[in-house]
Amino acid sequence: MPEMPEVEVLRRHLEPRLKGRGIVGVDVRRERMVRPTGGPGLRQGIVGGTFASVGRRGKHLLFGVQSAGGLVRSVVGHLGMTGRMYVDDGVVPLPRHAAVVLALDVGRFVFEDARQFGRFHLDTVSLGVMGPEPLDAAWTVADLAKGLRDSRQPVKVRLLDQAVVAGVGNIYASEALHCAGIDPGRAAGRLKAEEVERLWGAVRQVLCEAIELGQRASLDFSGGNDGLFYFGSSGEGPEAGERFRVYDREGEPCGRCGAMILRRVQAARSTFFCPGCQS
Image 1 (cartoon, helix red, strand yellow):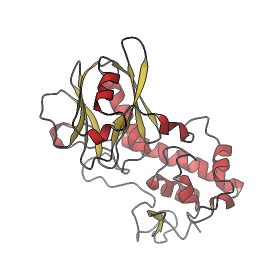
Image 2 (image 1 turned 45 degrees about the horizontal axis):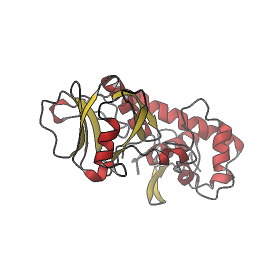
Image 3 (image 1 turned 90 degrees about the vertical axis):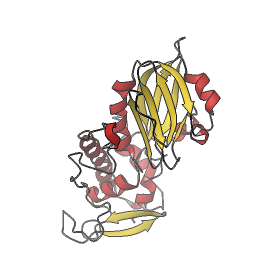
């Protein structure tokens, strides 16, 4: 599943291709993907409008669409597990799993999703309960400490709570905890002040590194090979490997201390860690 860095890379890719483009039609091919707005509501809300911006909140894309009267509405896009969003010239046939297609004044915007877990709608209510953005200058060590304080949950599980910090997912939570040298099983509320500070810095570091890495990837969707940056791919060609500290590296040596990386299940999610430098 794409996480925040992948969504941010996609946002940066889409914004210059969409900004200023007019929306002249909406073709909803998978009605469940536009719930709760529904196809008619989506058409009424954005047809005739112009893309004013492409933003992000956590793992969601926010498409700002400005109407002729100047009102800007946000279309919330979520990639789910297998979603892809891109702009093409409208000449090639639509893919089999196209879910929502926007006819633009030049070209078209395509949202396809084989497993149909993604969403594309006008309901922004759920975004209001999300925590601060980890890369915002306003997010401080004190904010993270407040989110972890008094919690008996394992710190890895607590980091996945989107009300604590928006956008940190399973992969980068494991990576940040390794970077900070913290056992993912430690109770969040038991972390010392210096550990919270290390974790705050590690979260920002691994997310920034992933975004920088992802921007090297080609997001050319032509020819059926999208090159989409998922899961830390280096973007340097099909032979390029993943660049993770611990994620999905069970049984491999830790690059910092040489101990074998282990895997455990927390809250039904795989956690990868080093028993040597995260003890």
